[in-house]
Length: 125
Image 1: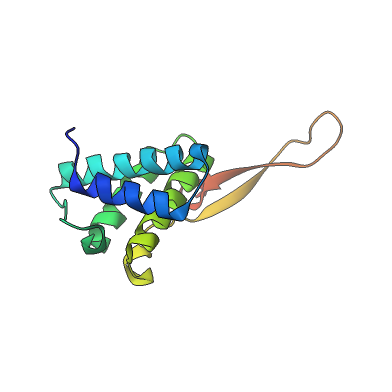
Image 2 (image 1 turned 90 degrees about the vertical axis):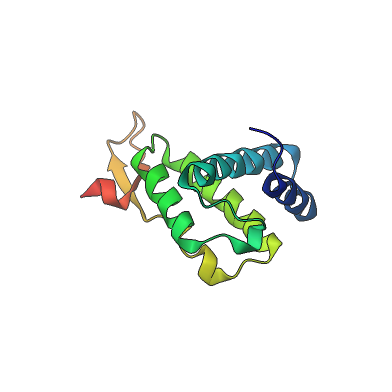
């Protein structure tokens, strides 16, 4: 993918947020996955602030259906949300960037401690 205007805008937002290098890398990777989806979806806006809530909802739906690691999905959504908040998007625009998560109890560990794992609420049904 060639260098896009949206990627440059996202990188400026990441710099403004001032995260450490690990979180900046996570945020940029999350952003690039959203941007690839938007290119396929045909909804690549000229500015971050112009992102369509329906496109974000479709992205989250697709990511949820392909989800292998709930923690990583949550981290990616947080990264994208932080970028878009910094860009000036409204909370209404960002509402689709969420998933419902449940904690599922696992068997106690060998020391008798409780253990849980996060799963998507839709997958729990």
